[in-house]
Length: 431
Image (cartoon, rainbow, N blue to C red):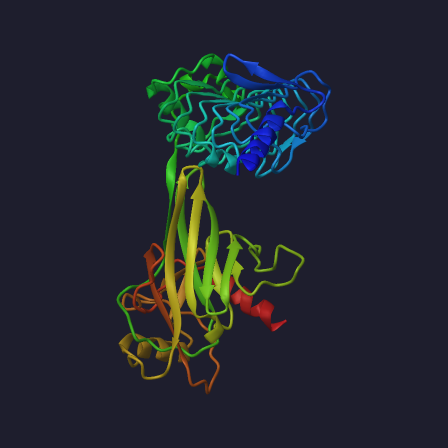
């Protein structure tokens, strides 16, 4: 046993004395330092002592940091990598450095950074990422850095910052974000309010300025005039008071999503059926109903005005249909549950009888400026469908509700849908 203990100590002493050939290793002020700066290195050397606490690789020619680049030095507290040619930090390159307190990656060409690695660096106090090519920072990039005191992001290519980016940094006292080409739109308004209210020191505030739009170019963020901004809203049109109405399968299911917000929100559809989930960016067809892409006519046809048409609606199309409106200030969602019911489930009510009788008489709705309107005061719901005689099933459309949970099934009442679009769609399908 004594011999084994001696062998272990000899191995540890050998490790302590080891040092990569281009570098100088030693103890200074109680720290184990490895100095590899100004060595014209093109890769991180191997063979460092395991007890190194400070590593300088500044002023070399490192092009990137691969996964596990610093696995040999888990006790590292300071890592200096400034003035290299680093373009990419791979996931896992820094994740093993749980005791790291200072990280300097400034003055590189960094555009691809493993932000998720920061989640493992809870002891970090200084982070220098200035003078790089960074264009975006994830909202949750800093959520684990509660000990961070100084953050330098100046002289990058950041166009915006997500609201709440700096909220987790409860120990932050110094922040540099000057000399970035900020887009002064609604998405950056929060930063002005936060910078004016925070106790964090933000130097060179006159250089925290707008790059676009042109009318605001050069305007310091602190003097940004009020902008007309509002969070998005979304609402699917429906008639919530008529249940049990039976329709034959094969009709054109038509939904319409009314959106509002400033800037104008982008709309996309989320469709959940038994066959899986589908995301549809709107629009995928033009005003004439023809596909915008060359891949063929889509099954679900999303128009720029917020309408979604599903011709020949059948059993495989049952599910939850949601429209999601998104702009720089957030998102909003509205959903409708759609299903097929067997004849007799709930029976055919008075509204259904009125509709079928008017359909037989070629009456039931007319258009004013392309908007579907009831033909009389008693027609509060407009239903447009393609009938297939002899079918044993009936279609029922659910109530639109905000949020992800669909309610009980109710009849869809659609206003305002564009009747002319339906007719054109049917004409196109005929050919």
